[in-house]
Image 1 (cartoon, rainbow, N blue to C red):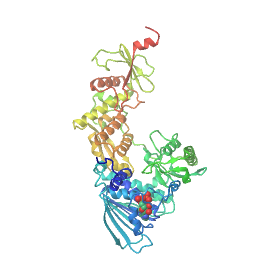
Image 2: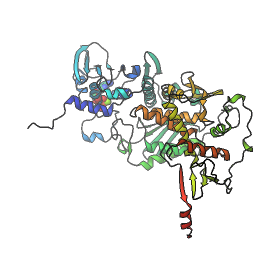
Image 3: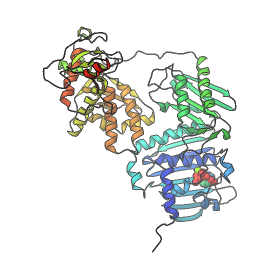
Image 4: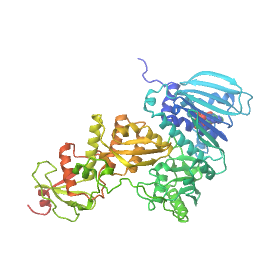
Length: 586
Ligand code: ADP
Ligand code: MG
């Protein structure tokens, strides 16, 4: 009988490792640029083509490698940065696992060109899918160039889940901005398909770097942070609260020069601003935590985005106090300029419009006196009795009132029903969206009198641009308008007067976060869920009796399960018999 257990070949091991370290083109750029920084380069040049699938080229003027080292560097677990286990405590370089180059070479065609000062000529090595294709001596200056072509050519699954080249490129640009902030003394250039995107010459300070990378508007509203707690130091800049952004991406945090996305750090930043900003708004912050290497473990995650602090409480305190101190000394400027009206008349819920059978464009409509409709007073008792008309499960219910925290209180002859009208409305909109998608029909679109202009970061803008067709299918009229701006010219009817900006920032997050691993159908569903959630009646809204009636009728008609798209129940029921029993009556 032959043995069934075999030792995996080196090339298979490398490909498995590559799966962990190299998730998408930006992972390659990260590894290569970090290597350049570790090699003390003062100038790093990054070029990509087709979102990095076709080509990623990183050139530096660092120490370079000798002929022998050039070959060693491409072996797995070959590193010049870690000699023994004890070195693992107190890592000061960006890389240390010694697997990046070998991994990348196993899933692409990698060309390494390098020369160090001990050599008179450089070394060129070409490896394709982990197999050595070429090696020769070449004339070149001191430094290193790595060229990665046809990434994932032999990993079809990865290739399939890559997003459009615009999105991949945007991730790369965002990464380079973070690295440029962390290493101001290194000059960076970056180009996509031959077009220059970043040109940040070497400077002395992060502040000067911010000058190159951010707009004047942001720059002028930054406040410096500098605070110590014990051995730990927090430095950086935060924008005054009015310069809030709509997601956490504007918070850039670094620990010992490494860009991190750490829950503890993010929570502390959010908390520091919690009383200063509306919910759902996030600060713009660029923060550097410096602490002795022995107090932080960076060896937690293969992509090294998370860290583990030896004393997390100290770090939270450092961030919280540091930001507070900085902001206390900063005068608050309210944002200038008038707030642009979204709809040129009083708000109407989608249900109210539905009720009134109103379908004409908004700009011709007369003012509709909102207040004249009877409203459900939270304190009111028994506004309408149960009806037998229609006989539907929901539409036959009597309306008792509305609880202050938004639930509707209804009843039949035999039970008390608490209805979460937010969830109910969400369900209806979601069903409608799913239906139009199935029918390949497009929901009716209402033109906006004044187009709404939305601004995004480069990364967000690209995510959005890549999904415009999806938004159009959902009934939006939206167009690209300048490099990072979009003009929303029409919104689907079902959206009512919901906050378009809020909806879009939520959508952009979904686009950026669920893309890679999710399957396309699920991704679309996620988007529809966010839309339904945002468009449904806001909890604080006063509902009119007719609106409630319409909602109940719609629920009867929908025939959907009694759960919202996120899985929460729409209604809970308390049979009178149970209430009587609890009251001690029979
Ligand atoms: P790690 O960075 O974890 O050591 P890598 O696979 O990224 O592992 O690189 C392996 C080795 O190759 C590094 O330890 C370093 O000695 C050498 N190396 C890689 N890139 C460069 C570069 N741009 N300049 C000089 N040496 C490099
Ligand atoms: Mg490395």
